[in-house]
Length: 412
Image (cartoon, rainbow, N blue to C red; front, side, top):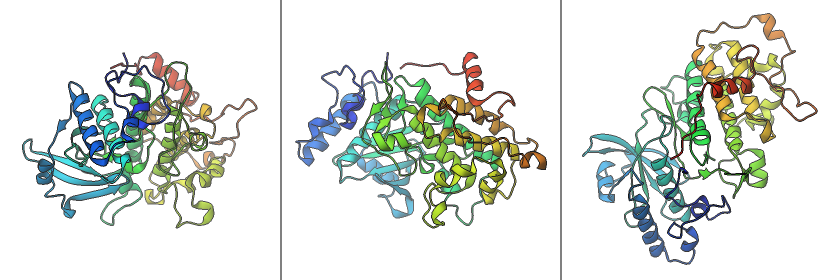
């Protein structure tokens, strides 16, 4: 059985060409919204949430009045942040004594309605320690509101790219643990969910951190069901955030799980370097993070120059080499040469636990015979290795992990 047996198909959700599924005539079709008035659209969305929610949606349906009370009428002092689809407020649900994050979607667009439905359905069916928990939702009148568990440390962006003067920069081991946890969230979506889910909007601002800096992926409004059967990709409109999209997806609209792997590579490079993917305040040749990094990947003598200066050199140099090698693999231009996310998790498990790994000596740093991102060989395959187990490359270690039964698939 598939993971979404009683839900609308992705084509229904997005109004795009997507997976060709056998569709129940009772499932939602956004094409029905095109000829409706605004009031009819709102009524239709509300009815669909109520219909699908019977026996499927575990999140609670809140009234708008309850959420007004919880957020003190969405007072500006409770504003946590603002994104492309609306504002997020801190709130308190008195009946359960629970602190929550309340996202009020923009009411002025159809895109908000689509994101609302997708997120309620996705987060009600997908559960993992590295995915944010959906507490409830509100569809009263023209309101579209999502209620999440509250993440006290905000987003990765807050601690990496927008560091407040009173905050300490993340240390190396915390950065690696955040990267590992975020990769585990993607691994669940790609390898365990059936059919697989392509996140499509992996970026630092969508990685939330709990009180112990454990990461959870949030904002599933752009998520899409992945290819099934003999299909190699899903064709869709290009959506996401500039700089994070895989090149083949940006050019052709062809989406695969390897598109998420590329986006992970971009964020992992941000974690290592402390640089934004696009930073117009830097010199022209450094404004695009990936473009700046690609030539540096080819000579490990440059690697320490790529580390975030805020780390002040407090990291195992060998671990830095290995981390940059993983990032380089994820950022391969050809999707087929990128690793599977389960193999990335394997490498990051190693990096996240080796807190006291010895640094390599000066002679090893001067050795320029081991590049992180050499040119592909004549067959188009990547020659990158990470030294995860000295002799094993990332894909070989991943195969060993699968043989041990660590990556079983679960159907819902």
